[in-house]
Structure formats: structure tokens, C-alpha cells
Image 1 (cartoon, rainbow, N blue to C red):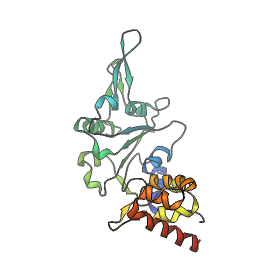
Image 2 (image 1 turned 180 degrees about the horizontal axis):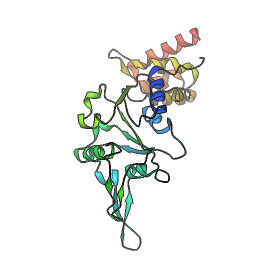
Image 3 (image 1 turned 45 degrees about the vertical axis):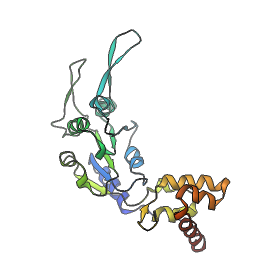
Image 4 (image 1 turned 180 degrees about the vertical axis):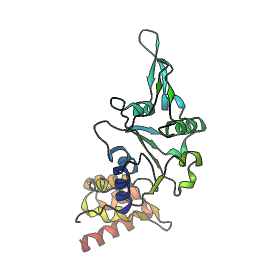
Length: 241
């Protein structure tokens, strides 16, 4: 297979981030590389901070909390949101918020404060009592597996002027697969309901077929009902390639 086409959704993300938009929501089916892109697209020397939302996520896990030390004292440990606000030398860095639609009420109110406009966002450090504000290079990329952005709480969605539907795997993620799997991974759907197959499944199939053979690997990874479809797609790809 030749050069992998980038796809409009990934071009849109690149153009948006390159032009200084610091609030972006990536949504769509799982296993397409949304988190990978959020963590690495347009990132400089400071790595992105990451949050994975669950129903149990607390404000303390976002902002920070008091933790015991070996001297039987407590000290404040800043959370990923405040670390991203600060970044390097107070300039700010990237915060990635995964599966934001799953955030609890406690976490949601905290995310609203963290993702507020630069003019309004501020937080009082409970130890030093300093006012902390997001640095000028602070950005947030949220990801979600929902099929429509309306499933995101309205108040949070309002803070993200750009929403991009991710409908195809990230090119760099595809390159981790053997070339004969690229077409099937791009198509992505199998079965009567057109369920999208995650790239993670293709990675597992690619690894297993080397030792177990394609037929058995397909049954183990995709299930008996979908295995034949995958193998047929590979045969077509081999002939057309």
C-alpha cells in the first residue's frame, strides 16, 4: 500500500492547532487515535498532562490534593490540570481530557473552572495561597467516543469553539500495522450493524497471525461471525495491491 492519506479530520486538527486555537473537542468512534493526536499534535518540549474521566473522578485528582510524607506530615501535590496551567516557566502546556462525557458532577464543575477563558480562570493554591492562572500557551483537547457533541454537557461544550468528528484512524497509528491491513483498518466496520473495529483489535490480529495463522487470529480477535469478513477483505487487498 502506498502513502497513507491523512484525511480531512486530521488536516482540520492540524490547521486549528497551528492557528492558536487552544480548546478543541475530538469525538467519534473509539480506537481511531484521538488520544494519540491530543497528546502529541503541536506539542513542544513539555509533555502533555492527561486525565481519564470516570464516574469516580474527583476534583482532587484534577487539581491536586494533600498527601502524607515520610516525616508524618502532609504536603500539597498539584494535579495534572494545575501542572498543565503552569507548564514550563509558567508558560502553560497541554491538558488532555479523555472520555469527558463520563465525568462525574464533582469533576465536571472542576473542569468548567479549568477550561474557562484565560481572563476568568484562576485558582487559589491551598498551601501558598497564591493565585494561579493558566499560562499563555495552555491548551485543552477533550476526547469522547460519543457520536454527537450534544451528548457533552452544554456548559462544558460552550468552552470549546472547535469540535471535530474523527471518522478515520490517525495516519501514524495506521503505520504501526502491516501494509496489507491498512485498507481494512480504514474501512473499520464489520458485521450487519456496521460496528467499527478498533485499531487495537487490528494490532492484536497483526501480532497473533504471525504465530497462530490468520484464520485462528481472526476468530480470536474479531469473533467467528466477523473473521470471514476480515479474511475476505485481506484477500481483496492482496489482489488489488
